[in-house]
Length: 185
Image (cartoon, rainbow, N blue to C red; front, side, top):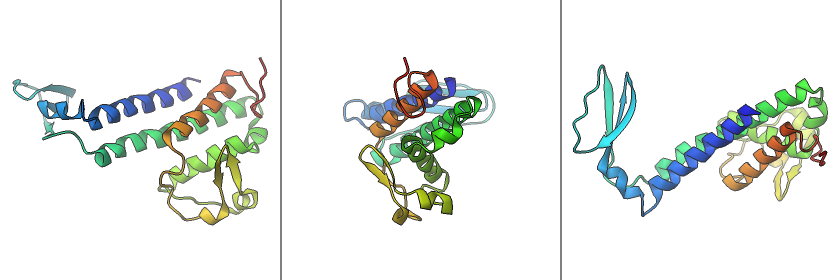
């Protein structure tokens, strides 16, 4: 359970950083600070502060608000990790309960597995023969189809829906629903 919550929370922190860095209200404030990445750790200080650190390091400063496109790479990486870690943790839990075969056959989890696989294949859809025979796989209004093989993942599943998919995994691992997403408490 901890793996699921940690993955989700890491995405939340990344989303907060993205929002703060790209907002017209808060983004320009980054230009008032320097970030220090050193052998002894990480710190931030106002531009006019004298900072001493031991060993080697880098100082990073920004002239203005971070461009959304550049900041997006960070949140996209956190999103991919959230999905991948959540699928892995859920699969491990199901294996411990001897339910993995049943879970894998459920559309909601098969969908999550294919999304994780796309992230791990350089953000492109890659289906083996077994998967192609099972397609299309639908979850809510989203559908993964055989014709997508080899295509880039792009923004297939928006962040909000990704959080909803992770919430389904959390509910299963918490024991609130079974692998079919049927309420059990």
